[in-house]
Amino acid sequence: MSFDLVIIAASTGGPKAVRKVLSPLPENIPFALIIVQHMLPRMFMSYVKTLAGSVDFPLAKAMDGERLEKGRAYVAPAGYHLRLSRIAHNVTFALDQKTPPISGHRPAADILIGDAAFLPLHTAVIVLTGMGKDGLHGVKKLKAMLAGKCWVVAEDERSALVYGMPRAIVENHLADAVLTLDDIASWLAKQAESTG
Image (cartoon, rainbow, N blue to C red):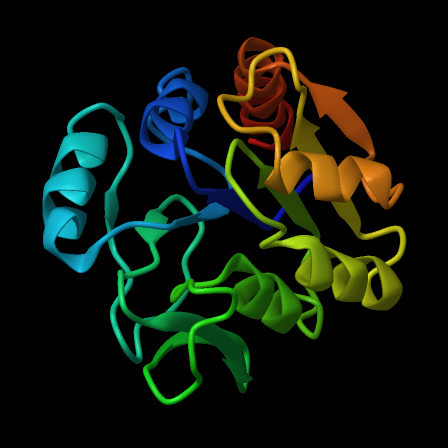
């Protein structure tokens, strides 16, 4: 299956894990990539700058009204839920501060993944290390709405710093694959090669 969109969700231990997953990717990634990393707002821009410096493709903070484009990576801004909507043939971002935090998190992966469930895109979701269950409800919706057009990868307990978010996916039988961090990086790199 080739993908139009890849969503990565992470919390505790995520910055290092996300960097490891993204670093093998080529300069011209054939899908759009969105990262939801739970983080304090004061640390956010430093995180984006560090992450952008560790990859070969364009990566930046998602902006309100910006169009989702293949070949680019976007980071959901701290303090906002990142929403997706389809306008004509374009998918655009909206930054939402009105919706309360979900389980203490804004951005919440559940919101973003839930929006992706209503888009006509082949979507992959990668749930990495983190406390809690963020991503679970969004993935349930994605699986219900996009059966056959989505793929969900959960990080294996052996490599996850905190096995909370991935555990929720695995225990609810929503993972199409359960992989260590190294294997997730290899899998995503192969998707980039086979899709491109």
